[in-house]
Length: 265
Image (cartoon, rainbow, N blue to C red):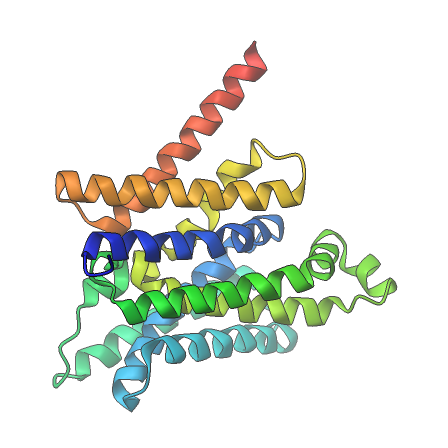
């Protein structure tokens, strides 16, 4: 079954959608869209370092994302600049450094468009193993820290007063988000990865009454977006990664339209 490239793409896409849905909910609740964008942009620097040091790309992207997140924490404590200023600085600096580093590697053939906008149709069996093993690991960790992480999201002060240690929860969230970026990069690329985190969760918000329900619906909308995007790519011969994001956007617009219609009636 896995010899068919389209089936591999579906399996890999569903694996990514399953894990980005719940994490995307926390990104929305915490208003960390720009933070996710910064980490995803830093992935290109991780790719450049992987090719330079001849190490695994997924591992390099994960470690680079973690280092950028720690750098942000250090800069926030030692500087008077606002968080969005530091995020903009790191986001564009890391992707610029990555592009320059790749341009100097004339001995390496690099599919830059694949890294920037994804190449889901070329994923291999090993990629599927990495996506599902990493994704399941993140989901298990998320289930274990769900109560602590949600409490820290709602009110860090109350969470700390109850002894839930919000700093530790934030650290786990940062690690999980970095791992998701590393395993998802090949699906939609570093430029569109944040959209895959945010849009399905935003669509689910209109139909949810509890946080858990929103997380499940975000997974559902993500999977539907992957299927529609891949089928559209196959039918109309258009890029698969952007097609997935456009499909997700269309679902979001439908949910908004339905919500407005129900309010008017």
